[in-house]
Image (tube, rainbow, N blue to C red; front, side, top):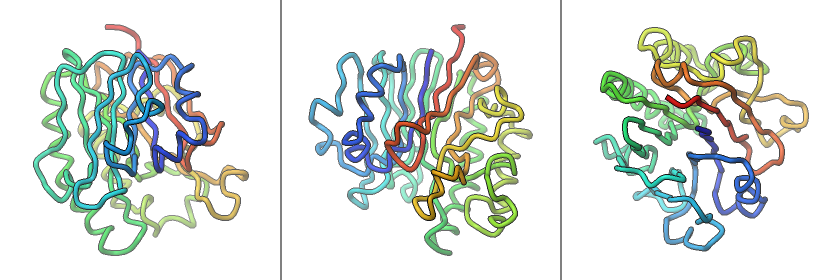
Length: 257
């Protein structure tokens, strides 16, 4: 099974840059998109509904053209979960779980705190609230993979300029400790780090200062998997080219059960 996570920074924008042409030849079974930045009715054209795929959206309901997640899948999901029960989070369109038999595939868009103190406080609130939810999901007995833009670079290997970013949102000590709690204490498997223990690849680059050309990036897009499912991760790839967004698609191949 091949699963892709991709922050589109606007799905219509990514489509105009050829994303769905690329997607059509990648052999992807499930695609999790973040930042669709659209309402579902604005994504009704054929280019957003590729043949052979089912698609589900969870749009932001409080702020149009903002956030939003989607799941494309070859198989129709048995069920969809479009929120976790807290309106400030759910109404920003940040969680979509597609269930396929015993497997849950989630498209998650964790808030960014880079725009100021208020949003950073919200991000911390989301982190504190979300961890127990993830623990319950992990304890459910289901195979789970949570794909998405987590807006946190976990370790110094996940960011080009660690020293100069220690006080910046996305690399704050509290954020990094939270990722450690998820992956060490709770048991979530960071599929990239499992497959590339010494890897220093990035999934996001600032659009300022030729960051992408100089590969001054951050790895903030993850597929965190439950232990048994994470053990099935066989290979992975980050695709910085072609450029569809300020993020790169992250693809993982999982062995069958």
